[in-house]
Length: 228
Image 1 (cartoon, rainbow, N blue to C red):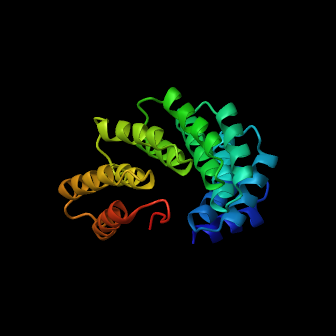
Image 2 (cartoon, rainbow, N blue to C red; image 1 turned 45 degrees about the horizontal axis):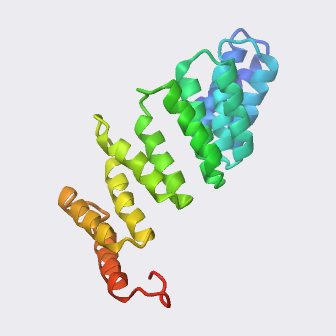
């Protein structure tokens, strides 16, 4: 309903006192409905017409998120970087670092992703998304097969005083990193520790399978056989 109301206002009163507000909230409405192309057009139109409006940084934020949702990662990175430069809102700067990291990660540009997450942690050491940044740094190192560095970041996450939603996956990935490194004894030990820590985890079927796989590879692994 709000979409129709904002569109009707803009059609009837294109120069009205609330035209800028209506155009901005039209973009927000499109975005909330998952219509990212339409939202992008609305935000861009808003900035062209009302570049000095108080909602201008919010529109820029919306543009960046539209690009991200549309998997236009290079455009998202450019927009979030511009947002970090112009915005005085710490929440926008923080989100810009994180989303740039996520966009780089999605493109498998792990070194650049790491730099973005590090920038977040340096500028917002107690930020609400600290755990996500640490987890993603661990994932970057894991993707690069830098197993020791991956475990270091994931252990930082587990040692954080604020226990959060990523702890379970972090503990699993530590065990998985040892498996990927062919250190099957340590992998098995960490898998068993996971089972004790999270006896009702949705990851248990995978954990049990990988424990069996680790035992198999431990006894059968040789130069002729790869890891199963």
